[in-house]
Amino acid sequence: MGRDAFLHKYGFGPARDYLLVTEEGSYDSKAIFGVAYGYEHGTALTADEFSGGRAGAAGRLAELGFTITGIS
Image (cartoon, rainbow, N blue to C red; front, side, top):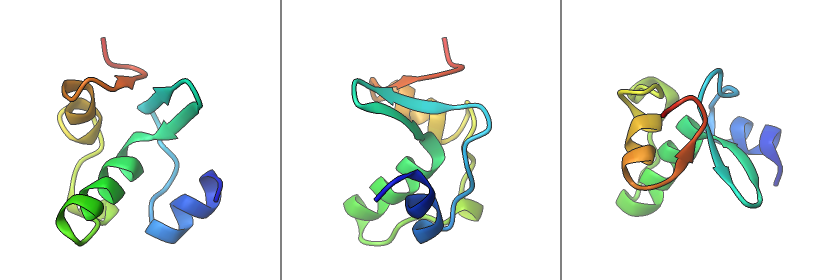
């Protein structure tokens, strides 16, 4: 679908600081977290419902073992 279409579809803006990095590419961590939450719980989180920073989505993804730029 591509980055812009994904962000638009789910109502997120581009990541400012934290990207989830895989062998296939880099992805907006807050958007990925919000949409993944929806797959797990039935309803995706909107951008206004949670923080995307180190103490929010990016930090939680790092705790789960994902590589996130900007988090050591």
